[in-house]
Length: 206
Image 1 (cartoon, rainbow, N blue to C red):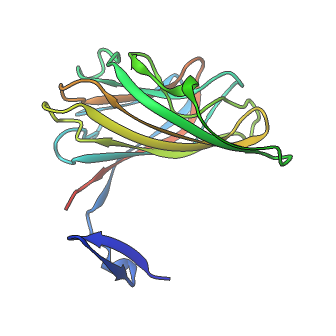
Image 2 (cartoon, rainbow, N blue to C red):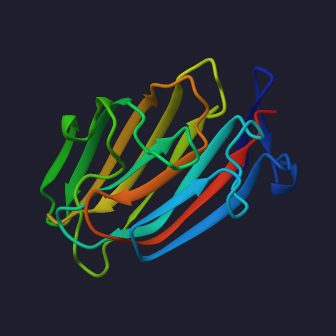
């Protein structure tokens, strides 16, 4: 089956992996949590790049897990290289879920996970699960974090199996309301520690 790519206002088929432009997606850093308080990507630290090198950055959540039913994985951003993570964020969220027993099948706006100029953690998934096989998967895009003109938009989606025995997908989009350059992103649970991997990629726009 051919892939499809969008280029110069036209759509064309990509018949092989060799046709995909090289260097379009670059792995910058993989961080692994092992009962860790947080995972922090700070520009200029341990090989992390988070500046004008790339106009788009993508974070991939590879099975991070949290340790109780009440915890939520979230993120915050910094404009002072991680000294403070307290930038105001405004966001919108909706979710869909379906139970292992066939119950649910719900699609709804979800105000519990949106922010209105909130400076705390922006949730990434809704509700934890203390079961040993529970985890979260998904991704987040951060656009033009080095801009000193515009606010900083983010778009993310995640899926987790929550404590109610449901597959739950959460979509969130919003912006960090600052025209200062963002140079650090931190992921953590609202309480307790986390396990798993988060990968940071840079994406070229041409």
